[in-house]
Image (cartoon, rainbow, N blue to C red; front, side):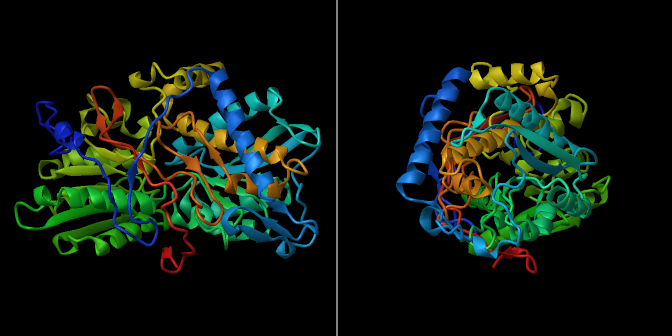
Length: 514
């Protein structure tokens, strides 16, 4: 258990002090603009029928907005236009490129190289939910477009074991052999290895499962759309939290030591660079000492790196890695002495799954996870007791069970609903546009997207706005893990940064926005 987040006897002193914490301002960085706001919440639908009606209304509003503004493909087929100056020069697409490749009169081919094995295999559960959700919508005739064609999704999933060197040939196969309509990828390293090629081929690359700021580049990579809260936004919230607690953190010697275990990949380095940028702009930068150890995310153990960090007696620890290393970090902090001096510990947003922090994973009575903080991206835990009264969560559990899936095995099933929901809504919006479902209409639907996610907390916005707002998800909760309840408990208000994350032309040579 993290010292400072609760007492050894299980008291709630740490949680009480945190409950008054709200991150209501954020320093400016290259990836996130100045201020966070708390979001107002409205009532949620209480049944799947009410959700379906809400989504139908929201889709109609997006379609109307697109048509009223005259956005779409030009008469000569050379240019796609969208909101806030969004354009794609289609004349630069390869010879023989087709706006409808991957479509037949009855089928939509979507490719997804993802982790079905290895240390990050839990992320593969996203695709299990997506497959079930796609079939449910296909069976219900959701994908009937304005040309009268009714299609079903052919969802082609391949295992890359979260290894970018495996992703590359799989993407080649999906592009050249399967000739898919669109491709979704998992992870920052893999995404950065293939997004140039996918964009050069003018193939939609929606909902990349990663929080890299690189996906917010509608000018240079207009076909790529991210799905998660930006790691830069996450770093801003960490930094703001430290600034708000600076007196407590520096009371011993005037310094705060922040330690991080960083994945030695584009994923971890994006976190590290973003947090360093936040520190550089902090009014307390002279008081903050940032200490890191780097490790491959596929490394089997983290003991040596965590022992080195523990020897520095950090006041704050930040997880800048993911997968099974989330669990290993929790256990190492509990056993290597770091917990005795640590005031606050943060898991990265990708560690939110119960498959990493739950009692069955951390061992013993599960208290090692108690008191850890997370910037959680505003997503509900569909399995938490608090969700027993949430209509969609209850329906989602039953839906998964009907498809042979135990929802309690992983919180990635909930995240899978979010991503699959955006997919289906965007496909349906695209189908209602002039010309029916096409690649260009899908990207236009995403760049103008606005909808209400069934698996996010009230007040979290899911939207994009062309070149002005290139990130779907920018709001978040700040939550603390309650080992007794085995769930993340939201502390304070929802943090809403919609439209405040600035675009990012990612420079891979410096692992930062250019």
